[in-house]
Length: 413
Image (cartoon, rainbow, N blue to C red; front, side, top):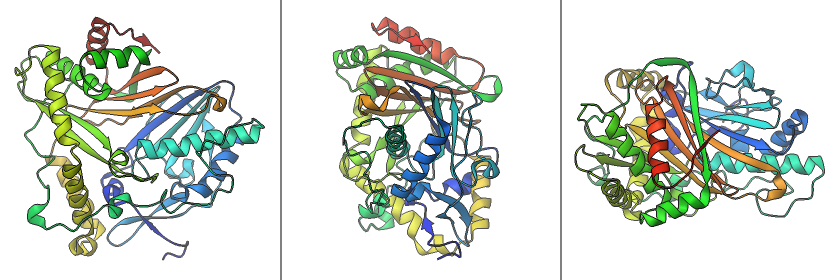
């Protein structure tokens, strides 16, 4: 317990997020919505503060402990600011009143940057949709009872649970999957660094994407990942390191939970250059590895490995200062384990009465992992959103070229 009330631990998969973060480099992602009319900032603020009663983990601020950072309740008013067009800027405590998210408004748009320690993309999306629903209710709109949020805003234990702990099965270190994400250094894109992150967004008819993926005998995620891999190999230009794709896996599909916190692991797809000659070869290889990486028994083992590593006694004895020092040394000598992260948030369901016209998701990037791709499908439209820390857009242009060669029309937003 802290003087500010009951403390909350970060979930097992997120305990290192605040440790590896700095003022300039934070683990963030961005969710943007375009609505059917101008946003009333005061109603939005009231909606957020109401919904925080339902999802109290979001209504917190960061505190430093002996061995770990932790969260405590934040009673400050939630700031809603003008969006300046720059996404994924580091969160400044004074400007967010300590909240680990930042809300900006521009006309019909709402932009929210989240600290990944709070939740994964799917968890934050539940929070965002609840906010929009509450805002519409405050506006006087009649909305369906679709279960997004209750009228009483009573917190649910399951929505706030650490689902990693729920599905943990005791495991010995000799059986842990410690090498599951290891591998030799992959090919990484290079380019001219830019001060603020750039975004490139393409919209497509969702039915065209689904039809193209089905024709290739693949899921949308596998299909898009294969196209990205083929683009990266074309751009390697003599660099023979393997192409490594990191694909977040929403564990809620295999391990039922309503948690709004982090409940995701990663499937690492590695393609040796020269192995695939045609797009069909990339698709077959991605499908094969993605199936292996999302096998339920393997995921269960990775869940147990994660919990085991974070809860062993030594981790609670090792002081926070030494953890931070170790993480800095790791960043100094280690490099990214992926060429790109590709995150498919999936098909987002929300009643048309919410008045949402478009939903876009952006991933963070870093100095070693300079371009990432996020995918959202909403209202019959699929949006591919690239985040980039470099000026060059060769990957985006190659991606568009291949997609249109596959019969999918991409419109730049």
